[in-house]
Image 1 (cartoon, rainbow, N blue to C red):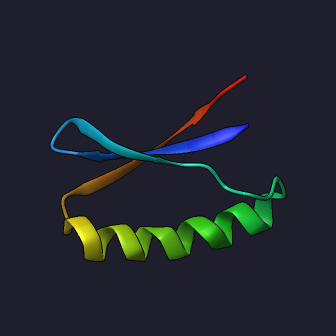
Image 2 (cartoon, rainbow, N blue to C red; image 1 turned 90 degrees about the vertical axis):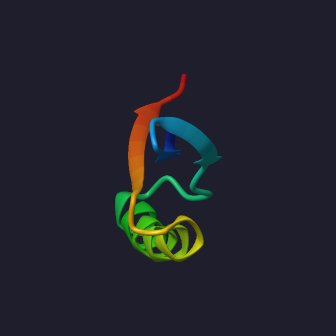
Length: 53
């Protein structure tokens, strides 16, 4: 399962878990969430993906 950590100034603020497992749907979801997170936290936000078993 893929999860995405929202990192701000080296600190993890929140973790996003996509509902769907299809790559196209995850990509569209993360494009939307990137815009939301930049509006919420500013331009200094970093999104890192990781695998959870």
